[in-house]
Image (cartoon, rainbow, N blue to C red; front, side, top):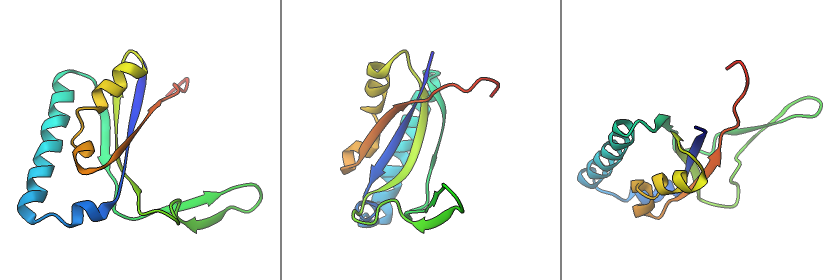
Length: 118
């Protein structure tokens, strides 16, 4: 079965406004959702990313490094999950249970192209 990345985009300020108690509740929702995926044997991996825009490295000649990729928006790629699913519809169905959507986030679903020998 193919793997799909669920890329979590959102505004970190939405989470920054939460009280410590609310933040803990959100964290518990994510943990419960991750454990559900694990128990269903569809979770391949995932991680939260730091709340910054990171760096872009551009090629063609000497590589150039810039801040960003989101210079005109407050949304950042905040984390990802990799899941195993039979097709896009199944991967989207999995993503619909993610707590990130409850807080105004966007989830980009992308199929991972297998690389021979990895």
